[in-house]
Image 1 (cartoon, helix red, strand yellow):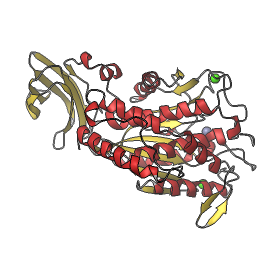
Image 2 (cartoon, protein in one colour):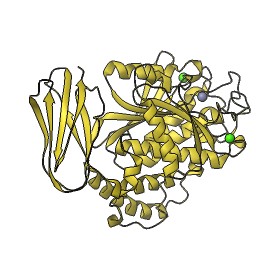
Image 3 (cartoon, protein in one colour):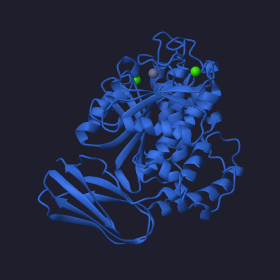
Image 4 (cartoon, helix red, strand yellow):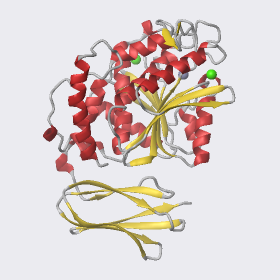
Length: 432
Ligand SMILES: [Ca+2]
Ligand SMILES: [Ca+2]
Ligand SMILES: [Zn+2]
């Protein structure tokens, strides 16, 4: 399915949803209607940015608070016809599993296939929303649901119920529209004991050869004592982790979220993103300015409650999380944000393929500022043509083509574009 089709389906969704919601105003989990009327022909140059802005606007503070209140025992939850207060999510407390049940039940309600992943003594819960164009290329948005201290009560509102709520909210919002790339909404167990849940998941992914293009881990989104909007992003030079951190920084600017980021490189390893770094995957974590002088003093105490949240700040970071996973699921992360927002900036560009090195398939993006014949061919290291990916007249625009190297041996290959008088060649590596 191409993006035009996706956007068309999305508009149909908006119009049907707007009617449906009128009858369901009281349901906190329903999707609200779009604030302003938008017509199909407004989706031209800025179509996906408009879509992402729409998704940001859907990020609902009431829904987030509803989730946090249940996860922290402020409000009761009904599971299998019994009603409970979650008093603790500490791994050895029986309510740890209750929280996992609530997460499962919530994700399941959004009609995305939802799974329990049991390992040793723990249990991860995740949903997989399969991409329409690149089902095997996955982005993960995640947070841990276990908490501290060991003695109940352990509300763990900031660490890390607030982030769990954002993952659930992102699932609620994004379950409504098709995306080119696959998104996994994951909640990990036993982070506080050394990221056991995510370690298990990342190892399984690595063994299976999963093509995880980026992991967005959320940690502690609620504390901003001086209301300065400062937050931390942690990255390391592993795969495209630095690019991913830069993307988050760009998005908070582009969508005017009133935040200021501090990028830590090399960033901390003490959370679930590092489980993915351990296997060479791109990953970051972002959250309150814990490492920039404004960390929550109630962290890991029985007083880590939602009443200490700076709700405006929490809402802004939640929007940033939704913007990030949405951008990734539509664009991957190689699109230059400036050229997206300014159609005049379009130029002849042949981008580096992604992923690279690759096995067995990779994506090549290019842009064309004038209509004309475009050829894109693959050559091996001795200059023999091994594939022709494009040979046709193309309109002005951004394009991407996927190259499947099944049947070709490992090694260095070149891809060469010719469009009008523009010629460019780039190198890529096939590693089997
Ligand atoms: Ca558990
Ligand atoms: Ca602050
Ligand atoms: Zn945490």
